[in-house]
Amino acid sequence: QVRLVESGGGLAQAGGSLRLSCAASGRTFSTYTMGWFRQAPGGKEREPVAAMPWTGDSPHYADSVKGRFTISRDNAEKMVYLQMDSLKVEDTAVYYCAADLSGNWRRSTIFSEREYAYWGQGTQVTVSS
Image 1: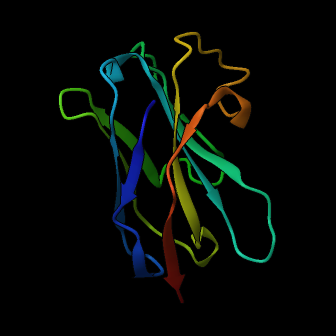
Image 2: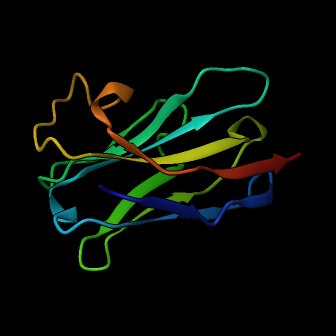
């Protein structure tokens, strides 16, 4: 079992920054591909934001956050982060951390929710204009 706990959400102004953290359990965290997803209010579907393969390959970003968000990880501390800069009102959402323990990631599926067996409870991010 893997437990994921997000923190760092809150209220920010447009143009501002927030840093989300995700603390993970599990003995082999360094072999987990980690992802961030978000679900905006109003019944919108959850969507991928960023993902970092465990192999050290380059991170992947949704087009909507490229150049503004940065995913990083600290394997020693079993943490993954999402630095969010130049925030926009449309970034308002519940943000979820997720872990893929399969050890087999592919570019074509790294943003697929089905690849991630473990999810955190989510943290709310609200961006005001």
